[in-house]
Image (cartoon, rainbow, N blue to C red; front, side):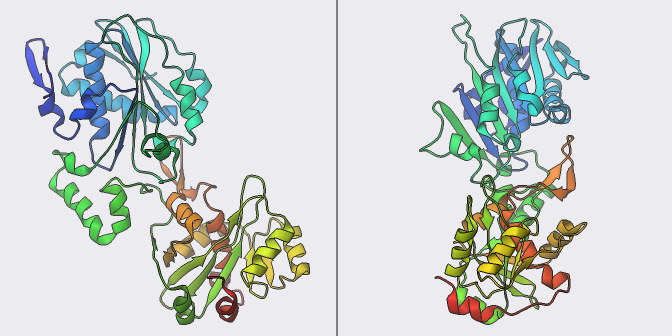
Length: 432
């Protein structure tokens, strides 16, 4: 059972306050306390309630709240904590500094501080006047690019206290993200998860306060967009917010039959070396049905021209039309002289990225399960955000090396370039 607290003769049931689904989370004192929650799962509101309670209960505690960008705290975590104090009837016990923002528990001087990872090194020097900085709340942690970035902040949670009930804790809340995100390996995978970790996944089904309209909207996703429903409704790993493409699915189709039926294949290349891969996706394109069937990929860093040539030869694409990144004309010319006769530069012009993406968004895209990097990119290629968290009509320039090459390969259809049928070569030489 949840404990009950007395505030100025008022008895407040925490069970009544937050409802069900978070009992273990509420009481947990392990070093890492992790919640991966779907939309509407009340994870942030419950966390805010929990910290208001804990600040009042433990006079040695101070809380640091971080997000990727500092100015997104004010409209999210700060507002949630202020709301929680009001909901509990204890707002008069706290001083709320809107401008910093900062919250002070007036009876003791304990602090709730808010920072961003705009400059994580500045966080390590934070000090408090009362007690120690013992707790960290990381909200929307999926926005943090690397585990190392978070580790720098965790190092600021240090020191000890003589109180017998003292504990330090890192609380992390986030919406489901890519299954290859460091959060999954660090906290959810049994073989790699950090020691002393409590991790749960919650869904909108534990939120008793969702109204009928919101609940029906979530339920309807299972009919209209099952892939998105698994993320948004069930809390499975993936990307739901800001995703550039939501018109794709992973489908174990027969490659040979698909190429025979569609009779149109296309190939694109994006060049990289040290940090970025060289990629080559191949797809069957059904213009009449507006379908793209991605059946093969190559994704490899550090490739020299001879190695790229050998890869193209192995795939039987020496005679195929390949549209390649025009930022590396030397590699294109070297490949042409070696025998990749029909490789040619992509037409990059003003606004070509937006136009190419919009064209691809008009297709239903099927990805063969063997194309692992393609699947990863489509699940993680997102629009950029400004520092207020607003989505921009411009993708983030990463997780897009396969997608860029696919976009190049589709130019001939929407830019009215002469198209060629490479079906014979694909059928004759594709390596199964």
